[in-house]
Amino acid sequence: MAILDVKSRLEYVGDCCYPCPNCGGPAALAVYRLDSRPKVLGLPAARLRRRYLGICSGCGARYSLPEDKGRAMEKGGPVTLFISDISPWE
Ligand SMILES: [Zn+2]
Image (cartoon, rainbow, N blue to C red; front, side):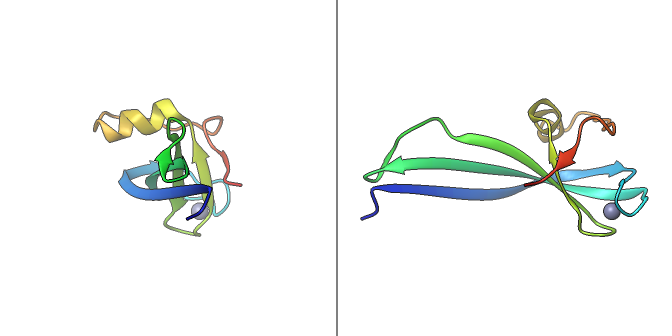
């Protein structure tokens, strides 16, 4: 058994229209929620880390979205993304 094991799960949240800075859009940004749950000796060790990943449908560029915007999208609310909201996914 691994001493430290990090499981990640990717879940589709929804689409958001966004002027992609990479391909010049407007393109649909497919948004996914990435949950990482570190485990130590098979037991959950920490609160899971939640990140939101946006993938441009036009060029495939990956962006990191702020957590509050990702949560709002999950709730189905209207979400407006600004250029300042996204950063390259690393
Ligand atoms: Zn793009």
